[in-house]
Amino acid sequence: MSKQAILKLDEKEFEFPVIEGVEDEKAVDFRTLRSRTGYISYDEGYGNTGSCQSEITFVDGEQGILRYRGVPIEQLAESSDFLETSYMILYGNLPTREKLDQFRARIHDNAAVSPLMSEALKGMPKDSPPMGVLGCLLSAMSCYNPDLATNDRACDLENFDESAAAAIAQTATAAALSYRISIGLAGNQPDPSLSFADNFLHLMFSEEGKPYEPVAEVSRALDLMLLLHADHEQNCSTSTVRMVASGGANLFASVGAGSNALWGPAHGGANMAVIKMLEEIRESGDDGSRFIEQAKSGKSGKRLMGFGHRVYKSFDPRAKIIGKACDDLLNKMGIDDPCLDIARNLEKAALADDYFIARNLYPNVDFYSGIVLRALGIPVDMFTVMFAIGRMPGWVANWREIAMNPKGKINRPRQIYQGPAQRDYVPVEDRT
Ligand code: ACO
Image (cartoon, rainbow, N blue to C red; front, side):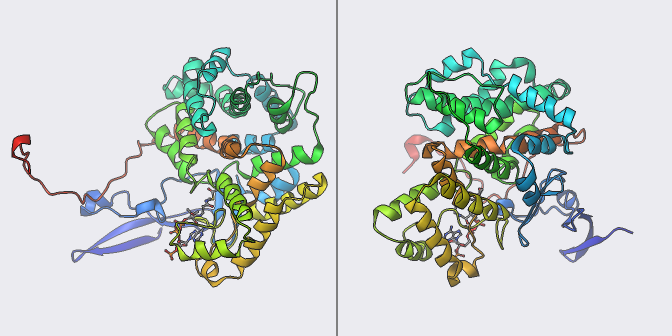
């Protein structure tokens, strides 16, 4: 007999089934709680709530484990690349050589954004925040690719291969194009002979008569940064994608919403916030120790950006990988970045400090990804866009998981109302 949980409420006992995941994760299935008891479960911030059963990514925050489709992130970082990993995240298994070649070709074939979309981009203010532009463009992809975005589930799933490739490839193209437009330059056309990372750097930096020249270490660092961000189970943006998808919205509308959810500094905006914090510390002549004290006091409203994670409570395995890649990249490029020294000081001091130890606050992936991106010449205000390019396969795979579930329900949480109790309308002349 399968395990049951017993809840005692108002002198009555109720049994609820227990669900177990393949990695021993356990949940009490409360789906019938309200209909049987009249109560709902209350979990602001969803820290204890399983919103779905998913087959894509496994995270164990206590032990610092991250696996995409069962494969440890360390192995993927060592042996795979962003597109191969993306295929596995989307479709469930590592591709054969033939499938991988087809996938790469589909990505290249879908890389160009519609000329009409480029025109729309030119109409936006030059100083628009890049994440604002990206959110608009992803949603607008439903308008420029109506055949791929019908909001008819069966039809959208039939076109999934194309729409997934368009979302992954055109996010990168549109991001580079919007950067170039913002600094008054014409856009570059995607180059199918280049890898995903090199093509992006070419789209960003190639000039007339001076094409971007790939450098192996640079390509590898960018590819690794994208791979490490490719999925991360039910974080804020991915949950948003699933929420929107649960209402039947098409892929582009759903990932557009996810991209907007990523924007905030507590989520994808952290990589930008880390660099701004490091610059601020450097400019103030601090070596990091003053800032740490301010972050601990909580009074200044400051936090040590790039530290802490809702799920990882021992270490973020992505931070370990990218921290080392960051060192390698800067050494190979001969870059002496004073911000990296400050970052190292902060990391060392925080890891030995009781405040951070007691609250299980460790560096997260964004603590180092910002330094890597800066070394690659990516403007700071585009860092969160880079996160979005990396996270796209995860968002797309989560959209697909929702779309493929025939029993899926619209996501609709409840609340505990704490506003005024019923009261009468007062005409304006009688109000005091
Ligand atoms: N610096 C200083 N103190 C911190 C930090 C930090 N970075 N993060 C958490 N704390 C403290 C809080 O003040 C609180 O202290 P208290 O118990 O004395 O009140 C305690 O640690 C718990 O903090 P919460 O905000 O409740 O933790 P939560 O799990 O909700 O937040 C979050 C996680 C948002 C990531 C938080 O740690 C944070 O703001 N970090 C900085 C921003 C950041 O790097 N975000 C990137 C997340 S990773 C990603 O999206 C890829």
